[in-house]
Length: 321
Image: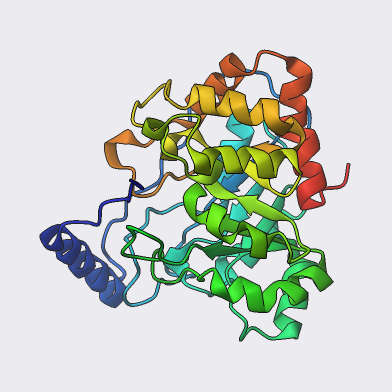
């Protein structure tokens, strides 16, 4: 069975929305501030890159929609750069949060402020103009993110503001013309269903959250085995983010054999990511410094770490040395 993130209970959701509407009207509600990580004991290679983080706010400059899918923490660009500095990373990739809808201003502002250190992945559907896509490209955007449509056992296609996967099939020629990739947030079982169509699009495919497998289903689960086959064939890239797949925080031992299998399949198509500020994880939100320590523990070969942390991201996101 495919694990779904449980929705907020109706009472709690309504309370959160009342808090947001009060803030939207008064701008006086105190916001949760996304925590910064502890320092890691791992010394990363030069130009190491955190390949998945979200920037949210400041909300007086970049207001949220009236009915966001969730109430995000305050996670401004300068705090993400502080995270990179704490981890001793030179580079980062900002993925536009669905909480800001399809308004790219918060993303483009961050890329303009830190042009040598940051690249971006935006949200847009096929109604976006060519001129806007060109402006995003000039500003450092290198792909668009799409969310899997409902599949067997699913009741939702993602947070409000996200872009459904069917938009990708229409937009793929436009992404290809820009040299962009498609970032996909979907379960590996759904990927199995859509892979024949997706791999014919002729653009790089980047999978969020290690492909969203279920550890309880085991390494031999058909969806995960298909994920490995796509990785071996260089049909996908995968972001190494253990916490969204694990039932065993904070050390995620249940994910470790899956990561080992991905590395064995094709380490040259893997990148590392913190997923800061770890939205909707509550008390199980990780410390990015601890995540990097775990990566160093699980990947003992320094040359392999360099490929995943620095070499592969530079190729995927077009960073220049």
